[in-house]
Amino acid sequence: RLSSPSVKVTYWTAPQEAQAQQLLESALPPGANFGLTRRWKKVAGGISEPAGWACRIEDGRATAIGQGTSAPAAAGQAIDAWREFVTASRIGVIDESHPVADRRPGLLDAPSAHPADEEGQAGKEAV
Figure 1 (cartoon, rainbow, N blue to C red):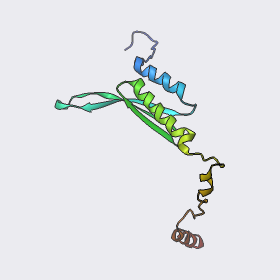
Figure 2: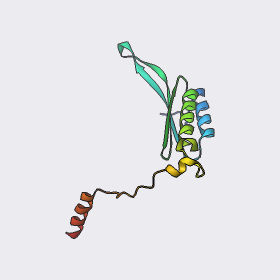
Figure 3: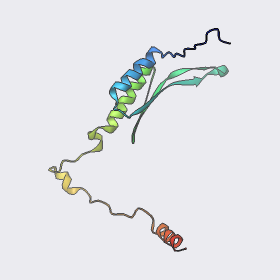
C-alpha cells in the first residue's frame, strides 16, 4: 500500500555516465546509436569487481568500440575509432590527376549468383 495516491518515478545518472553521454551526443551525427556499459571481471571466491567501461557506436555500416577505466575515456576512444573509420582518408579517394589513377583495375562485372544456383532457380520456376 502506498500512503500517497500519486507516485513519482525518477532516475539518477552517475556523473561519469552523464559526461560520457554529453560527449557522445555532441560528437556523433543524428541517427547514430551508442551504448555505454560497465565491464566486470570475476575474481577469487566468485566475487565480481569492476574492470572498466566499454562504449559501442553504431552508425549505419560504421561500428566502433572503445574501452577505458572511466566512462568518458571509453567514449573518447570509441569516438576516435569511429572518426578514423568514417573519414575520407580511410576510404582512399584517388585524385584522377595522380599517375596511380591510370593503373587502377577496371570494375568487375561478375554475376551475383553462382551459375548452379541460377539453373536451380530456373528449374523451380518451370515447375
